[in-house]
Image (cartoon, rainbow, N blue to C red; front, side, top):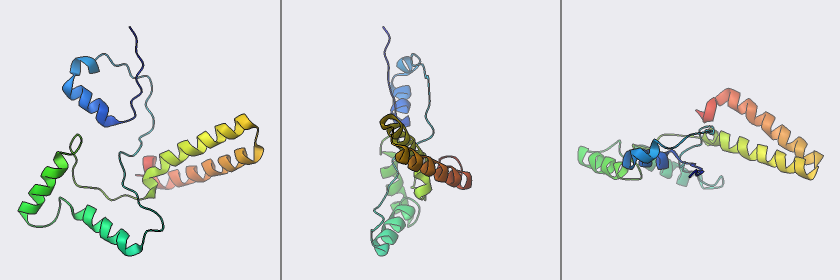
Length: 142
């Protein structure tokens, strides 16, 4: 019997490999997408700057700063989330670059199917702009 499985998250595969290595050995990977950010935290562009600053400070210090009891407790909380997390890492909108490129490409395909030349031109312009950004920030915005 042959089955097809689409896996869009590394944590599912990691959990399967850990809990059912015999099943993992039967999986044949046929394609891997570009790295897509794993659960990035995002906020609205119009969120008040002081709220952004407070949120950023909370996440950047969590599990890193304070007395050893606090840090140990927070690291334990992080370790028990999903497949185990470490302290949060700083990021920017550049982390979502691959997602934006995928969306722009989908928009181009839709426009091509509809025969909408203006929408194709817009999608091409979006893809060109995103390619320029990718040259600056690197693969997957890192």
